[in-house]
Image 1 (cartoon, rainbow, N blue to C red):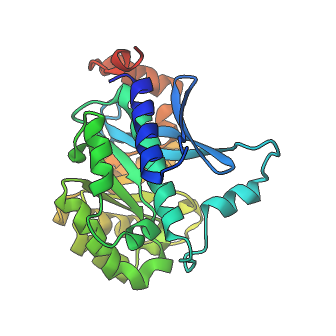
Image 2 (spheres, rainbow, N blue to C red):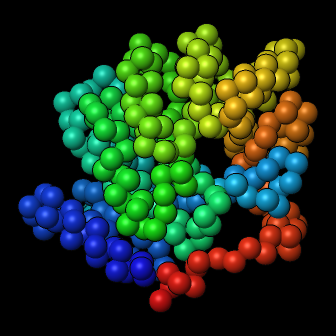
Length: 295
């Protein structure tokens, strides 16, 4: 189904659900965006690659792009406030859930032109969304996925693990398991400082398909045992039959660290440099569905 037709379908659906003129999706410059109050959201898709075969893609991680959609431009701080409510603020759970669903629908629609049935789209889910939905996690979005011609196994529900939510890990685990029962892949993301005992236990109990570790601020860590700890993390991920991803790689040093410590997959600007990208295009000749969605 062409993108424009899908955009209209989801606009019709939301208009009926909200019993109003709520039609947030727009197709502009070949991409899908959605309006949410004073902001316009879009997608940036970042390739996830095999560590030892960087020309081989296993999927894309979807990241939110945000721009003001008002006559009076918003300041950066105002945008951050709209998207980052305090974790303890539970007065508007429906707003969080609606925004999360809207964002994932935008990412899914933007992913379709380059989707391959053997690849995975990594979609971030706010922990507050998981906590706010009491049961049947993923049921609503499953309808979106099927309408777009994909399956839940093509989607990795991705949650960033944060110390703030440590006391909610048991409830979050139940929600994540609900996604797994519907056939979704599961990905957990960490930074080095969150790799403490509760987080390690969460990995062991959730048995995610993917575990990501960000390299941001990794160069500031003064720990002689850093390589050893990263190897231990990879051993843990391997023990639950998952695949590890080193994220946000921007230089050769981080890329080398990923290889040396046994990360299965990599993501970052370093691998998108022109020479590497040219090599990828030369070696990767799979057919794309892009032409279908342009018409």
